Every structure is written in structure tokens, then in C-alpha cells.
Image 1 (spheres, helix red, strand yellow):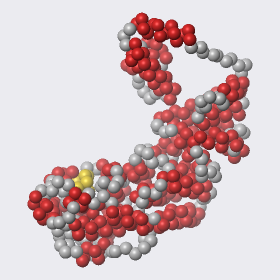
Image 2: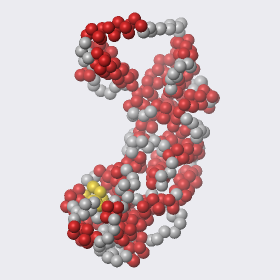
Image 3: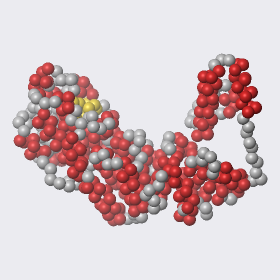
Image 4: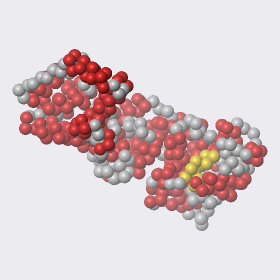
Length: 471
């Protein structure tokens, strides 16, 4: 890297993935070059004058010690003053201080692997280190600026003094699992449907659930899969009810200590009932209220797609069982489907006349007015009235979409019949039917995200039956 910079052709020959050190050097070079260009332009004399000033006025002090151990001690001492290093750098120094001389090279390689892993996944080192502590030790509250102090006070608990390389390797293994979880995979790198769902639900910023996933790495593959499902369901409940992030992060940190001690399926079921199921039940009323009020303006676009995809997938799973077509939520999110507004956002005069009274702008954005439809179908619907859209919905492969027009029927009491039993079709479309369908979807959401009903709610079938214009 330094040779390329000196040759002035670094930008033309950057290939492959840069390490953290290479990226830092390259960024420093770019900042320096931009400064010189901004301040002195193409003036050779001005640049030469600045160079003379810099080399004569700025002094570099080199401290040479007898061995590495003394160098590490000097490093710790001088960084205890002025602007300190972060906990990750101080931890590195701490591990080297605890290691014997013959361990230095191995520890150096292990630490570089850790840094490269964290850098490659674009994670903040201190957030990773903080979540590592939450998932590994009985700690539920810790600020980033407290990490190094906690480590120095808990040397016996962490074991890094007796085995610094082992501790560093555990950090590497945790970072690798952390990276896989962010990518929607289990710790072995295999795609996990529920962790893929979390990427669709949480976006790029969601990290709190990683505390529990890291704490549950010891579980069997079946139990870990269950854990991922429980995490997704509860995380959605927290998101849709607007639970403060700091609150459920603290809950996850507390639960991690319990989860690490789970060894049997019976203990796991008890943990799920005590923590996940009870938490969802406690949010039941707020969950109902949030789903009944939900509009496309109240959530981010990617979360709206997640919600519609999840509801659509749930009906398909109930009707057809788990297949490669129904197993993956990505099929419904990015498989050629678009969000269709049954009452168009910009309705034609005919659509307005047929729909009737109401705040059309607000009603068009309600969850009850939204459905997934194939791109080809959505393109043909346009801003037409419901009477003209209704026959087109029958062409959809999605049961939730087709059920707008008529309830699919296959034989008697078949799996498909049972799955769509509560999906009442709508003969016309107006403000009342949008309300009725929103209640229907809220009821469906409780089943899709396994939220036990905490208080009586109006059955969507009863609401639909009382409204005019329902087939």
C-alpha cells in the first residue's frame, strides 16, 4: 500500500478487499491529498514552503524499549493521558501484556483476524464488544465507555489473564457468528429463514436481537431455529408497539444469562414461555391497537413490505404447508410482487364516485386497503374502481389477494378451505369495508406473529357480515 501511494497510482490498482489497516492508510492519504489540493492547488512553491514548515516545526518522538513487554507498558501509560484510545485498542494491549513472549506472534495473528472480521462486516467494534459481554457474562447494563473498566475488574470471570489466546479466539468465534447472524445465516453459515426475516424487519440498524442469538449458540440446530423464530416474533411486537429500544435491549441482556444455562428442550420451552410468550401477551392490547391503526405512513416502506409479505405467507403456509415456495419470506418480498392500493392513491373519477364518502387520501394508505399483487396484475389495475379490479384479483396466485374477490374452495374441509375460512370476500369497496378488512388483518397478524390475545376483540367475520356490500 505504501509503495503504491509513493508511486502516485494507488487509486488505479486497488483490487480485492482492503484490510482495516490498509483502508485507514488509504483514507489518510486521501484526506492529506485533498487538504493539499484545497490549500495550495497546483502551486509547487506553496507546497514546498508548507513542507519546509512541517518538517522543521513538527517533531516526532520515538521511544525505544528493551523488549515488547516494556513497550506495552509504555503504551498503556502514555494513553492514560490526553485523548484516550477506545476499549478495543486497550483490550488488545491488555491481552498482549498478559501473554508470554512466545505467544505474541500467535496472538497477533488472532487479533488481526478479529479486526478484519469486524471491519469486513462494517460493525462498530465497541458495539460488538459490548454485545459480546452481554451475551457471555451476567451483565445487563454497560455503556461503551465502561467496557475497558469492566474488563479490568473482571479478569477472573473472563479468564483472559490465564489464557489470553483462548480469550482472543473466543472473540473471533463470536465475531464470526455475529457476522453470519447479520447476513441472515446461522453460526455455521447456513441460511436461516427467520434471521433472513429479521433483515427485512429490522433493516440495517437492528442489532439488539444479536445478544440473544449469541447467548444461544450452544443450542441444538432445532432449538436455535426455534429461538430465531421467537426472536423475530417478539422483535416485531416491540417494533409495531413502539417499545423503547433501550428497554428491550436491557431485557435481552437479562434474558441472555438465563438462556446460556438452558441445556434441555424442556428448559428451552420453559424459557420461551416465561420470556417470549409472556412478553408478547403483555403487549397484546397495544399490538391490536397498532395493527388496527396501521397505515403506510406510520412505518418505513421496507417494514410495510415485510408486514404484507408475512401476512400473505402465513395464509399460504396454512393452506399448502411448508414447501420451498412458502418457506422463504423473500419470495413474497422480492419475488415480483408489488404493494397494491385497492382504493387507488390517485383514483379516477369513476373510482371516486363508486367508493363514496370519506377521506380518500387517508383511507388509501390504511393497511386494510393494501394487498400484494404480481407486477403484471398490479400494472393492469391502475386507478380503476373496485368493480373493475375485483375480477383481476382472481388471477393472482396469492390466496390473500384472490380472497378479495371470492373465497377459494377446494373440496370440503381441506387444508386450503380451513386456511381461508375467515377471509371474507368483498362485493364492493368503501370506508366501511376498509375498516372491516383492517380488523380481519389485525386478527390474522396475531396468529402470524403468535401473539396470544390479551383481551376480547371483535371477530373480523362478524364485522364483515354486518357491513353492506360484502359477498
